[in-house]
Length: 275
Image 1 (cartoon, rainbow, N blue to C red):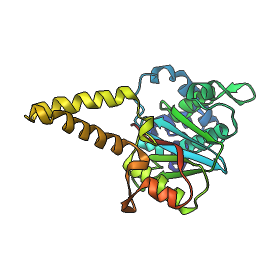
Image 2 (cartoon, helix red, strand yellow; image 1 turned 180 degrees about the vertical axis):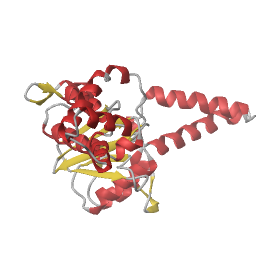
Image 3 (cartoon, rainbow, N blue to C red; image 1 turned 45 degrees about the vertical axis):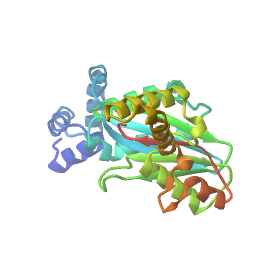
């Protein structure tokens, strides 16, 4: 059975294998497309262990929300070619849907959980490794439940899937304000909801850096304590969501905007591919 250039193209799009590999698979399969897919998959399975150490700096972030619960995950691959592909994005959709119905909230627990009749989530990803010909890795997941959840996904490039994702939990639903704050988080990358959540060791490290910097700048000894505390306060405001100036109205803090909407932020996840 012969095959055409269109068959090679279709096989490459479906499997993300190289053009030469697709031609060889179709040759070996006598032009049988489905058999060629299996050949690439089998050869890919043999190469999974060889891909273990490869860097996965591309990928996507996806999320799923249903009322008072929401999930988010980052799925990585090696190249943007695979990240753009339907097979990779379909895998991400499968995983986020499974996460939404699972009872686990951590990455290791999710990977070890059942995906479909005795096959683990990790095993399902390993099969994708084989089919797509690249190392595919679930980097992290986030789960929020118990009160209204908002998701926002951002594309940094029109030809790539979302590279930044935010999952925000509010004490009460707030309509468009929830989405606005999620977009704010995507843009300004806070690390904590409130200053009280900033770990003491993080603050102490920032205080040490501020003091060392001030001394290197030649600041007078008598003014050091005040300068250091001022810089530490500035740092805490910068990393705390509710104390940041709101993206759409710099005259108000995020806390003020949420309060005016009759709600507050209780938790969030912000994922950016590779960071």
